[in-house]
Length: 100
Image (cartoon, rainbow, N blue to C red; front, side, top):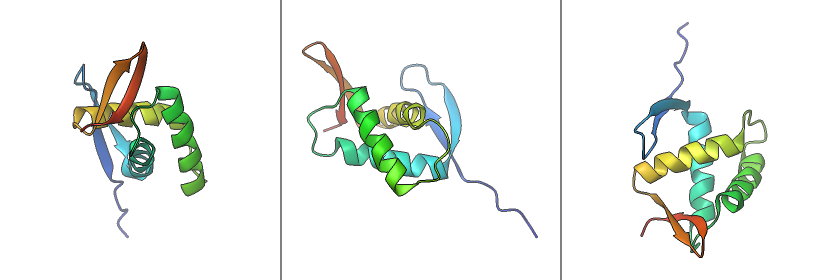
């Protein structure tokens, strides 16, 4: 019986171009949570975003192993590379939002 290979997603850092792979079973729920948190938002700090993503992922994938904040920043940076999310500064705060 053949073993089904894991599906992976290649993440790219927007400033350095560094690439690495993440299991799609981790990428998809974290990406969905990030998009859900930023939808309709004028901007969220990384801490606000991470706190919300942790809550959503723990509800949807209770068996999740690993650091959700680490995956959040890595996947958010990849989404920035793909032009889905942007980072901007307002009143001295670095904020994240969906790209218009």
